[in-house]
Image (cartoon, rainbow, N blue to C red; front, top):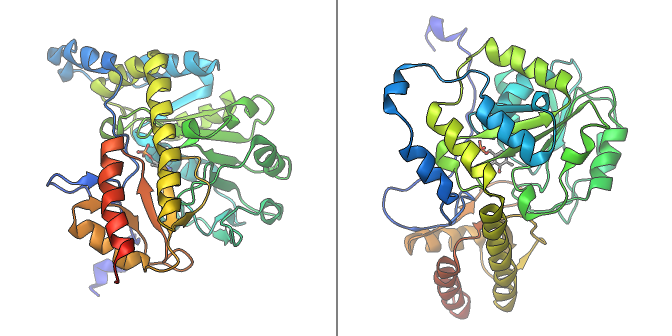
Length: 353
Ligand SMILES: *Cc1c(COP(=O)(O)O)cnc(C)c1O
């Protein structure tokens, strides 16, 4: 190691799912198979590129206002960022500054550990149970904050608001973040608890249910006080986060509730049909409330299956890590994409491997 490397901040980075250049059946990063709301294209066309010479609105007002309207919360209760990864990373930096460890599940979004390491935040992973459920009692002990996704990823399991509220009740002195990247496919959002619990932050994203992963938009909803703290850190870091195109496209997307609800229902329908088809092939899986399934087969090695699928141009996600090595995470695509997947798997499970 060179001397100058001694003081370099080094971190083991998050590994995103592959974004292949060739055309594949892409069921590996939980994107939406449907295009964004039609108004988004219109908004993009109407953008005046001459304005690109000017910085965008640092307060992101058009987007903040649209989100506040949609969720019936105050404009001072909304914070937006460059994908929820940006929002979550800023939340770690802003709210997790205790000597006590931040708690999150052992099987969860792997970015949490990366941010904790990057910012040197102590953390402790709490084991999910045999059925991959989060054990709420594990979060009762002294800690420096709590974060978990609901539904959890990659397990796809949703816990109801009583569960979330129980964790909140036991953690009144720290910040609790509920990462709701997949909530629109699941059940009630913890947004309805933010007025009651001023230490709660709910984050959501445009990347999944709003079909805009490529625009990078995420947001947090919380008490005005927490939003102020987040903004203070944001303005100390990078004032102009969302670009002009993202701001107007995001706002347009939020205004079209009908399209949003229609595409969400479509995916939920396909997900439920996928459960039936996979069960017939002998797969077992957690009861997904997200736009992906977490599946295993008693007779076939998940790693082998993942590689065979990839060879056939069907990309899913697989992790070579403890406890989940025999599972694959499969994004719910269009009906047609799922038929391609089923055809491959039906063949695969009917022959000797
Ligand atoms: C996809 C995802 C995110 C991040 O999404 P962005 O594209 O950065 O908005 C955050 N948390 C979980 C659990 C996710 O699955």
